[in-house]
Length: 110
Figure 1: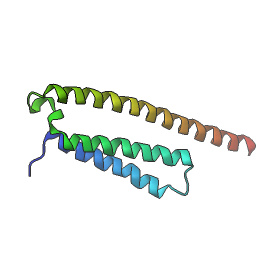
Figure 2 (figure 1 turned 120 degrees about the vertical axis):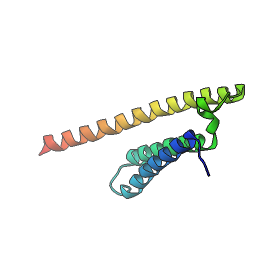
Figure 3 (figure 1 turned 90 degrees about the horizontal axis):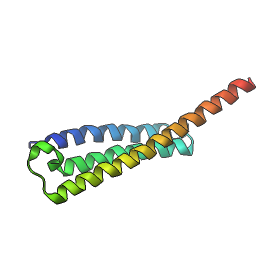
């Protein structure tokens, strides 16, 4: 069975997303709820994007002339994942800031 370029990319991104899921499971007892949420959201982000890429090989511009509906879907997909990626980035920055402030407070009290 041959796979399109987008299906190959999707498979690689899916494996990357599963890595975040495994990390969330391994770190479950050690991490706070915001950390669990960040790992879960990141896993969802990568795995869902991968499934869309696998299911829609026409998203590759070299695959032929896409229809107007496909171009519209591609535009909304990119905008939606950009917005979700921005929210995810802000969540990870907040998590990093909280960990930094926690370590700073522990160092100050020692």
